[in-house]
Length: 446
Ligand code: MEV
Image 1 (tube, rainbow, N blue to C red):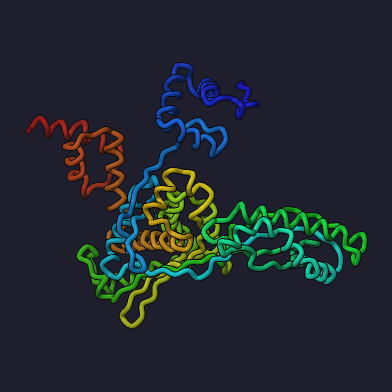
Image 2: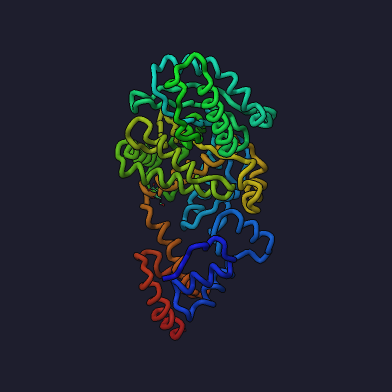
């Protein structure tokens, strides 16, 4: 049995050696080390930076970093970086971006930018007495956190509101101090959490000293203080629209009106059926996550908020809508997107910094709009394929390219395989056999 205690204190070399002894046969120790080292950055300083992002780092895990070079939104062109491993995602976003570029592009607006934090606490007594106490000390709580919010206020942000919420119907003694924030261009997690912890400490201290309360009422149990990643008031709405006949495209293999109605029905199905809704939204997040990741933002937070928002009326539903009215087709995505363009990884990770540079140093609001436009583009591409040719045609083409790369096929072999498999179902073994047998035969014949 390998002893892993004290693992985090070992050097990277020691960690790799311990892991390879434990998980891989002794023979391949050096192979494992060279594989892991091969994915480390050649520039030592950058690698040291990466090592510090997270604990027990033994290498880097690479994702393809691509771009949609011309996303036209609100009358401006953006080169949008995307970090994603799934074939076809960038290609699909790009295709949709081109399609809508010729039809007025994407239109996006910020609906709201409020972030939320909560202090969860237990207190027992007559609730009106806690509310009166809270109202009395509320302004002093704000005064106490002033030094923490000074810089944010200078940037135009800060605390927007603070209320006490009675949750005792759901759990005996359960209350929340519910705080709303504007964090400007920062995602704001650290800022919000620091403010909340300070508020909670002061709330407890003042409650313990409150002369108007009885001894029992002076007792509070602060359970936790933490931002909420559910940000339904940090919302962006993006749409594309055109006349129905402008949807016409030879590749649709149906007329524009039929396409518009099938597309609308596909969206409606995602509103009605949870199995479809999850896949529908997964496609939207293919695009959104890729931009969020490329810009150094927290894709888990964005995903969690998006899915909760999708279920806000009690049923999980698709996040996009289609309206066909007066001959106009409008396709809209409304989604909470809490992202930042300052702080966190955005300037620390060299590629995140480059991404923001490529986007023209956007504000957080602008990044919300760009990201949602990519989500909408992604959903348009997926639904367009689904209601016309089917998704596999495009996917299989990319899948074939991946298999050919894996099999280290040369250029001529790849071209021959692409034309041979153009109308066939693709499997790894079929491609391998093709390269082994058919190609050889073809080369011999020639
Ligand atoms: C695949 O990653 C995403 C899709 O399944 C999304 C969808 O079905 O809408 C194509």
